[in-house]
Length: 284
Length: 316
Image (cartoon, rainbow over all chains, first blue to last red; front, side, top):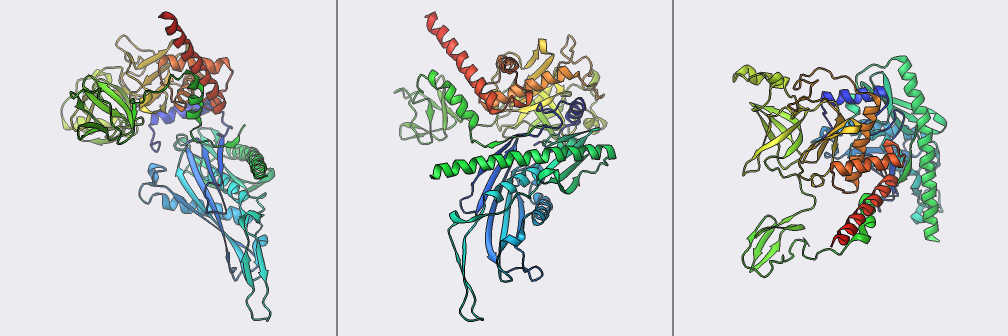
């Protein structure tokens, strides 16, 4: 419904941003609270659902044993798909969400491939590796979907446990080794400390705002999405929107993303640690 | 610069207001709320009219919808709690123009069907007389274009459910300078005036009965109710309001969102109370619709209802 708002509303939002007051009372550099649910999909090895304002995304992680890519025998594999519910936004009506989903899946996949320790996903060198499938679902678009997906993906990966594997080598040289899968509960966690979160910064008028909402996105001349890792390390950047960004504004946007990103990561890790502690307390 | 990560709680607002109001409950009327298939009590009378959401099976009246039983004289009907907006003549609504179709605009009212606003049912800018010719229809986009928000009155509801709107008074028309807050239509009740001016704040609000609420800085209006500056939707870029005024308007909008999160009715008085409470507690605007303040607001509402009930009990 928010897809095309009137010019008058856009003007009001732009004037507000110029004065430093956004329509939901946030300042220009404030992000919306992230509301997280863990373990929402029973069949997945790890899953998370994230609500940010009206935005609602879900990520499920499924791991499976595959034979490695011939070119990279000592590396595990990561695949991401993003599916957009056609109810999520008027733009996704019919097949409208498909291209959009492909773009976002590509962004997520490249961010994960460069930040996950793929070497640790090898079960049997040259023969068997873990393939990590991230299935992302956009249930509602209330702005900042890419950022929400990245946070949900990191959370889902953090709670994912790789099942314990027991490899029994065959007697002869030609015998295939036997692989036995253990229980999920005694699996090993994946290293996610380097997985980045994506911070969106929109340029509205001459100022920039972080985490734009659905009604702010159409007011922006351009939106930059930065993948920010721990310590503010910049991983990648993509831009949506046709407008140009002057250099001083670009530096300001970069700085905002590099300040917000580590804060999101710290808050997220704190939340994950707290919920892990709560879960083990319940189990005891 | 701030961000928080917390657990998502499904139906948190509902739980907050339910817990706060629980001590005040006198026990629900068993027959007031029915599920599909429940027999509706007709008070042992054979003289009743079956209304919407009911069906006569045998000699008993049975609900075909879940909802509250409403009795209007002999007519018994069931109204579901989260139904879409059902228009009635005379309602003040806020809608978004979605399409221009020969001589009329189609308006999204978040109802079952789109409303229609006839070209002959609007005041043209500057109050000029309309010439009924083809150019007039071609120039419709200069009055309202797709995406524009308008306030209007329901002129007539046809028996097929079609809603005809009009903006023939100067207080209706295109909405500029402000923001839209969408709440459930059941939360806005019919009241004497839907054009609210929070005088000391310099903030105006239009409480659309379809759940669309427009909040913006106060526009000085003439004797006839027309905005003095806009000149009937002239389209000139309005000057930005002062920062303090805008902050107050944004806080009013946040107060409306907080009320809606707790399923509390949106009245001018309830908005003012939520606004004042948020100021008293020193809550930042962005934190008004957040759980911490919602808890305070639920407790405040419970205390208010307790006082009202005590006063009623004392009166007898």
